Length: 91
Image (cartoon, rainbow, N blue to C red; front, side):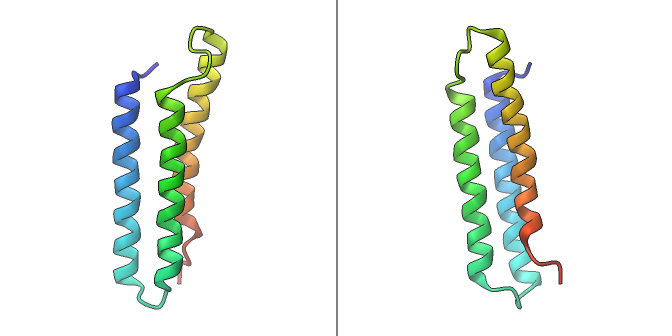
């Protein structure tokens, strides 16, 4: 299992990459409203905060089964965070 420090670094890296992807998308697609892009960035930030809370204070970390479920939720959260980008219009 990855250390919490590594998970936090990965979380920050993915978050900033997704936010920068939104900003590049904004430049390349001026027809998409700035409001939609800002909404997407806010969703990414909210998901980041949610995952950071899971990583910082895992529930029942002394119970191996529950800790494993918690970290599986973090993994699923990473995928969900990336899927937020797919809500932007493609054309």
